[in-house]
Length: 511
Image (cartoon, rainbow, N blue to C red; front, top):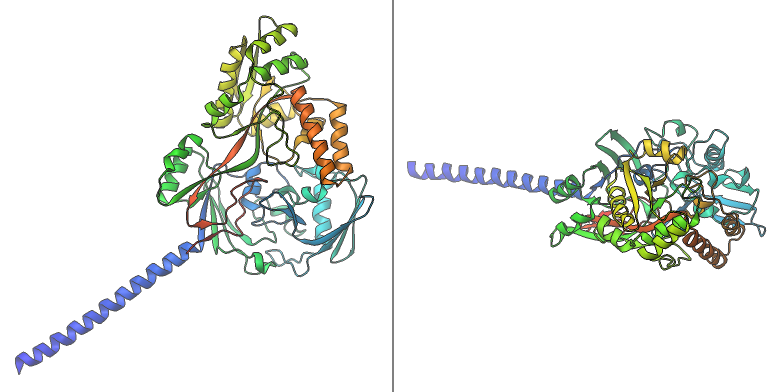
């Protein structure tokens, strides 16, 4: 009897214990699955440079748009991953035959993240803010052709132009042209409010920006797949690589160190993706200053440069040599690296002809970024071969470089990667830090804007590239690649970069 009851009790205990364990196990499994599901609903994106603010309509650094463009903020038009203009907050438009009137049909039912409605009066506010007398928009010139902004009704916006602007629809898709609202505009620098698929949550300065899915997003088909996303700021390339390998960040769409790309070879979890950017590395010269006011000196310096050696030495062989201020992604691209190929002997002769038989000495103001420092060192070695002494002065970017070079024009030579797409027109701007003046070049750029015929524009862009390749207002070196490193299961990041960006709307985890 006693044995029987003990057996019954112990069996009952065992059964209860087993049931308890099963419950705990089930809870643990459920918790684990929940954690995995939560992890799959979020992504952490690494960036080397932290933005200075979060409003791309008031400041130039590309990092601002890389966090906010197409995530928080949207434009009347947008530029897709292939560099093509697409409708966005404007669902369609018509252009008058003379190219002077653009009539936009706006999307209805669109709301900003704080509930403010988007309509033609908001679009007018954003455009007037960008083009007004006291505007600090970094691309204010995009709006210079606009004469009046009219709002016949809530869903119609009419732009009347002073002169045709063949690139207007493209420019309206840029980060600097996003639509901001009257109520929230002045605080967008720290708490951005847009119409995009993600809402701003918080910004821990020096560390990260957190975003969350916008549940009320107007474009149901383009709604964010992720529930949350984080941009983590890690400046040091070794630390970037360590964070990727540890899984602390899921992706570094612009990984900072080409020499470390090989360290990911054979990694089971991480993929390396090499795409195109618009980053043209050019060594600008002060064309208004001796000896750079003599075209022969500039041409001689170009012939001293072995572009492939610069790419190899500065960027581990990852990059495309260029002969003008244009990339192979851009429409109407011409390979002009053969106009002044590397030829040290010819370069020496041309320098002597220009009155410098014993060479030259001058200074390059080089930003602290690795590509600029290494490229400057390569130029220093190549120039030495033709008797030119190049002194390298590290110039803190952006603050000191913008003040000394960009604004004051106080420099001999500098080096920087120009990130804007199709920005060949910078050589027609006055003032601009190259101090290059060529009326024939300016006329070609005016003709580009006077037509909206793509074939005609491409032919004109070809002429513009050729003039720069021959005149050499800057040493055209190479296009930097987009070095992406990300988790193989993370899909939807852009491989190429027609506009500096981190568009997250299509990013999701594969099952």
